[in-house]
Image 1 (cartoon, rainbow, N blue to C red):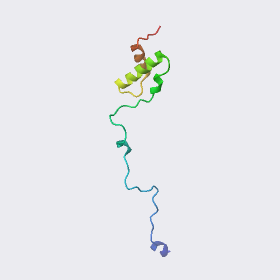
Image 2 (cartoon, rainbow, N blue to C red; image 1 turned 60 degrees about the vertical axis):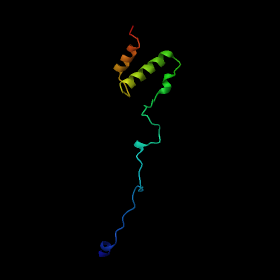
Image 3 (cartoon, rainbow, N blue to C red; image 1 turned 120 degrees about the vertical axis):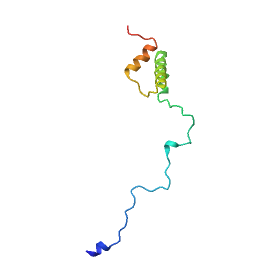
Image 4 (cartoon, rainbow, N blue to C red; image 1 turned 30 degrees about the vertical axis):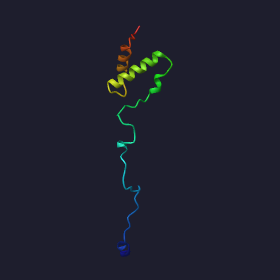
Length: 88
């Protein structure tokens, strides 16, 4: 039993390979400069229906002005009424 205690220990290999330098992708300088905001639903403003396109542009403008990614139904109602729509 003393032979097991005196045996040299070997470290197991690492689970993940060790790299010499990691790259921080959040600070990637290869992209365009300027900090412009990426529009996710740009193609939705080309529906072929002017009323829908006007509403989409108004919602997009509201989101930019108020720095909101998603809006509530109350905010959508405010956008719709600001366009002149009213309940019959």
